[in-house]
Image (cartoon, rainbow, N blue to C red; front, side):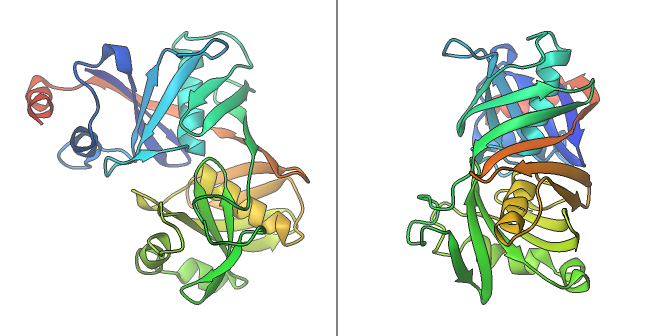
Length: 278
């Protein structure tokens, strides 16, 4: 079982090709592979397969380390995109990929960077079924902005940078993520303006917990910032680095950033036997 490990702003994923796997990925196998001590260690797994519709280069599935499946990941998508180009799946600068959340369209800008057309964000969705059309609400005593960018985002403005940096996300994140307001759980981002067009964001993700960075989390925070009157494009400063989010008046989003390989390898026969038995 061959794999590559990639990272984007500290958000690391294992990349595998479905047709070369010895068995299907199941939640327990994903959880074991992602385990930092008992497995290979990662924030999730990206599974690439041939497309099942014309006009696409590949079909991408994204698994969280707890075994659940994510609709989309900005960092994971960029890693998959750069892997596809590097591994010879395509030599084009612009192409399309299938995801659970729908089509994404990247443009390769260098050997390590790309801009991804993430489509149009929505403020009302089934992930916040009782919410108003503007996606606003209150949860756990905090005002929030709901944003659907392939997966649900709950963006919370924190005006004080010191308070933002001191937040214990492991304590404040779970009650928000699992609130009855969000039947499918939600990613949570807290953000603060540093200067016009620049925000600081911290992210708590479904199936992951606190993370060094999140492309969709950064996108949700950037959209909430723009809806409050902020400038676009938005430079989002995360623990793992910076992303640029360009938000149009119609909430169409382009996400730009980098992704690089860390290492490649093969699962040992011993671990492979354990995974096969699961």
